[in-house]
Amino acid sequence: MFDLIGRPKMMIHAYTDPTFRDKVDEFAALLNPESYSLNYEIKFQNNQAPGTSGSELTFEMIKPQQLEFEFLFDRTGAIPGSGEVGDDGVHSDIDAFKELTIGFDGTTHRTKYLILAWGKLLFKCCCTSLNITYKLFRPDGVPLRAVAKAKFEEFRETNQRVREENRNSPDLTHVRTVKHGDTLPLMTHAIYGDAKYYLEVAKANQLQNFRKLQVGQKIFFPPLEK
Image 1 (cartoon, rainbow, N blue to C red):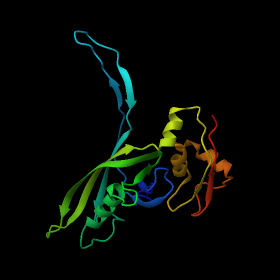
Image 2 (cartoon, one colour; image 1 turned 90 degrees about the vertical axis):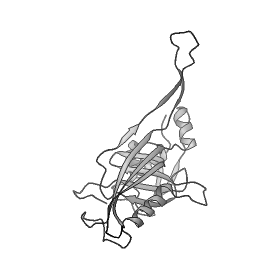
Image 3 (cartoon, rainbow, N blue to C red; image 1 turned 180 degrees about the vertical axis):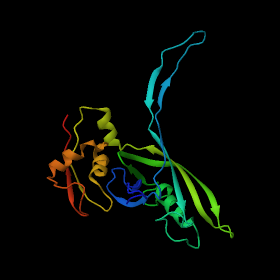
């Protein structure tokens, strides 16, 4: 999917499992965001004793990264590709976006696991906050344009986190089936936590054209070398 000037659109891929195997839905932004903010926070303890001028900061944790985006929804017909103006304006679009990002799944008893993909950005996360601002209305009050401000927090599956914290721990071999919307960098990021290994994966699978994966195709992800 591409934007108005032929660039790949920002995508959100939704999964029901923390290993990012079972993809159930995806969302393509109407317009690519003009910017996004990526927040890092390291927490220290300051156990300063009374009557002293300072103390050594004690490392406590590295908090998950946080990412903030704004998504535009428009049913005025002014933006090519936005679709026809429906009876409910942007309500259906907003409801679908809410279901994908913050919808509660009665089977897993939680919201979905997400991967945000845009250019070199591949961010495994969960949506932690969503604010909808309606900006343009029909005379009968039906909203035709809205902006959704979403906050996402980095998610690391337990086994991946343990491997990253213990650099001597070996990776396991994985086999994944290509689903609609999958790309090799996206699948590689889901397995290793970093998309930079996709060329090694392509070589291991003898892929002549890794940009054209076939739905149902099996991809082998070998263990990473220490």
